[in-house]
Amino acid sequence: MPEDIVTRNRTLQIEWYGEPLHDRFRRLLDRLRLPQSGLAEVLGLSAAMLSQLMSGHRAKISNPAVLARLSSIEAMVAEPGFAALPAAELRRRLGHVRAHATASLSLPPEAVRPIADPVAAIQSLLRTVASATEIEDAARLIEACHPELALALRVYGNGRTSAARAHYARLTGPP
Image (cartoon, rainbow, N blue to C red; front, top):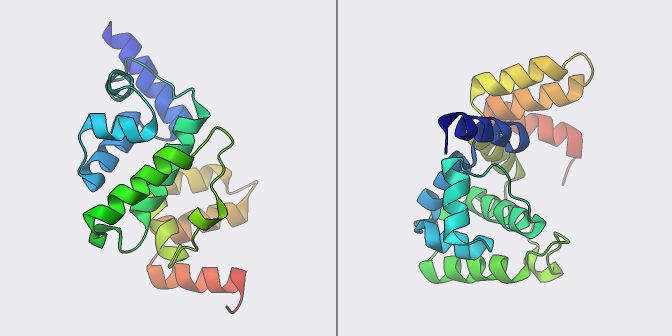
């Protein structure tokens, strides 16, 4: 495949997903300690399709169920304490994602657990998908029309955790 098509596909991935899919999948492969074929199985993709998405030979994930599974897995690895999960619990959770994330993007009520530390989860998510410079650039772009959203990007994406916790407490009130 000509390099210009791979470049175009990676550019489209950045536009659609915020970064090349290679980077998103690589983070998951590293955090989950899975081979590509294992991640492909959990996502509901063929190993060849995952490889094509990672290499830029394909640009888009067109199946909403795959996107739902990807989001579920990313949320799971962003949870505080994820690194300490026993292997059996990780396998159970991945099996649940594989079995229950559907095209409707719904999970059964028993699968939805409150996030123990929402501020840490938000910071982790933002810092996983974008660099500090990218977050600041995005905040600058939307600041005139959406100042509160720009502030949130700055506070959670680039700010200190103590400032993010104070901001979150102001917005959500006492527990």
